[in-house]
Amino acid sequence: MPNPMGDLTGPFLTQPNEKYDVSFAGAPAGVYKGYCLPHVALGMRIAITVQ
Image (cartoon, rainbow, N blue to C red; front, top):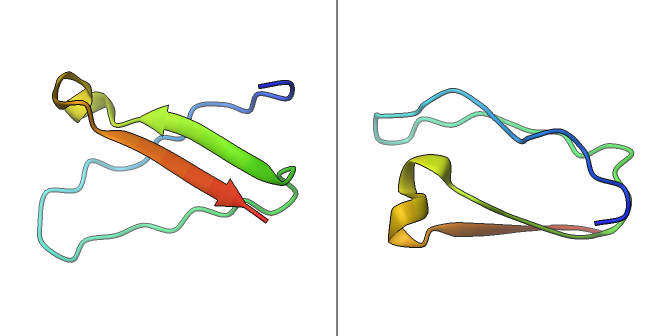
């Protein structure tokens, strides 16, 4: 990734329907790939598309 940004971290959610919001304002358009740290052994991955 030519312009890496910091880690995407947030609170550890454990209850149904819990959520938190993340803003990608000013991020360059593209697809940002990552993984879920607590579930990396299970292969949980993420892709965020910024348009």
